[in-house]
Structure formats: C-alpha cells, structure tokens
Length: 313
Image 1 (spheres, helix red, strand yellow):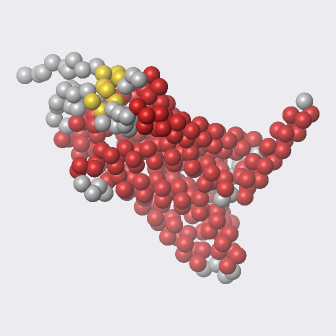
Image 2 (cartoon, one colour; image 1 turned 135 degrees about the horizontal axis):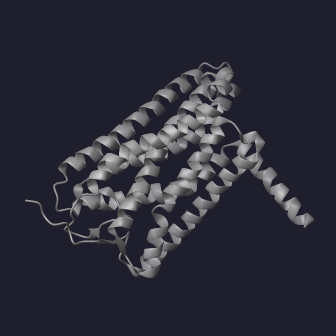
Image 3 (cartoon, one colour; image 1 turned 90 degrees about the horizontal axis):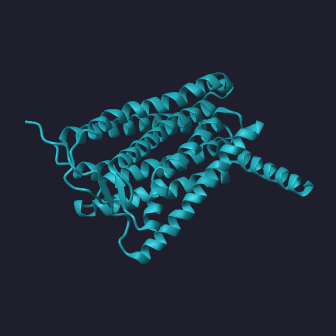
C-alpha cells in the first residue's frame, strides 16, 4: 500500500553555531572570504579576457576554473549569510534541492576540470613542441563541455531518486543543504540512494584522481630528465600552482571521509565544508596569480592602463 507524501515542505538549517556572538564572527569571516573570492576570481576572468598574451589553453582552463569557484561559493555562502542576518533559518524543500543540485554540479565539474588541467600541464611539459596543436581551441572547448556533461551524468541519477523521498524530520545539521543530512531526514528507505551516492562520489574521485596522478608521474619524470637546474625550476613553476590547488581540493575531500569517530562526523564535515566552500575559493586566485609571472604582469599592465585612463579623465 502506498503511503501519502510527506507534509514537510521546509527544512531548518542549524548552521555552524547557535551562539549569537559567534555567529557575528562567522558572518564577518564568510562575508570577507566571499567578497575576496568573487573579486579575485572575477579579476582572473577579466584579465584573461582582455589580455592577448593569456590566450593559451592553460589560461582558458584557469578562466573556467575561476568561474566555477565563484559559482560554487555563491551556491551556498550568500544563503547562509542571509540566514544569519535575518535570523531566519528556514529553507523550502525546493530551494534546498536546488542548492544541492548546483553545489554538487559545480563541485563535480571542478574535479573533472582539475583532471583536464593536469592533462594540459602534461602536454605542456612532456610534449612542448606539439602543445599548440594538441591543445587547440576546439579541443579545449570540447574538454570543458565533457567536464560539465560528466558532472551532470554523475549527479542526476541519485538526485532524481532523492526528489521522490518522503521526509519525517526537518532539521539540517549543517550550514547549507547537503545530501547526508537530507537522507537522514527521510522516512523512506534510503539504502539504495546512499550506495548510489557513494558509487558516484568514488567514481568521480577515483577517475579524476588517477588522471591527475598519472599526469604528474609523467611530468615529474620529464622534469627530472631535464639537463639543467634552471630548466627543471622553470618547468616545475608552470605546474606548481595547480599542484597546490589539487592538494587542497583532494586533501580536504579525503580528510572528510577519514573521521576519528562517528561523534565528530558533523563538526568535521562542517569544518572541511567551510574550507572548500569559503576559504579555498578565496585563496585560489592568489595561489594562481602570486606564482604566475604572466598573470602578475598582466595585472600590473591592466592597472597601469586603468590609472592612465583615470588620470586622463
């Protein structure tokens, strides 16, 4: 016999803390990191658009990565900032599922894009004479499209099944809508969905991580074979920024699933989620610009042009 659909139409998001004073600190911190993230990533997107020297595949992928970083942090941080400022922690089920969809879509696409960027670095260092031929504009566009399509194909099956669930509880022990607390709130049998989520997450992680590892194995082998220390240093500097971002992204993902105890699961998930949704998007533009001479030069030239135009006005 079929049960009636759940009467629950809203969720209550508990957030990071219930201490009003600590909430102010959290609000200021999230607001600053969000603004830094948007400004930093928009600067990278703009520089690559206006500077003719930054028209290679590497910067095309970096531009798309910056767009994903803005989208990813925007999918969750502004909503929580509004909840803190308005003292309204209620979110509708439709809005909650929309948030899950965009967070997972942008997050999964980032993993695939990081794998593509590692392949780009492999071609640049291991096959430098054929780089412009292999990584032409058509190939780059197709690779970006594949990242988005792969992410969609990964997330749609579990999300489609989750939309059909009935809910008995409405409390979300997080600062945004996440799959784990949503499934815990369901009074339907979620075993199959949980296994499907694990399979999709592991598949995304393993596929992209293997691509990154293989690319860097060949990159490191090629760098070590270079005759001079200067050449090795130059080759390593072209992929060092990407390696740092990869380490943060995959490291935080691994840390989230290596928990000391079930008791600490919620607090660790919140801490790691704060890193991936707020801190990392704010840091990544600085990681890429501070370690990249071309981007720094482009930034310097652009500001000089702006200053000259303002002076002229």
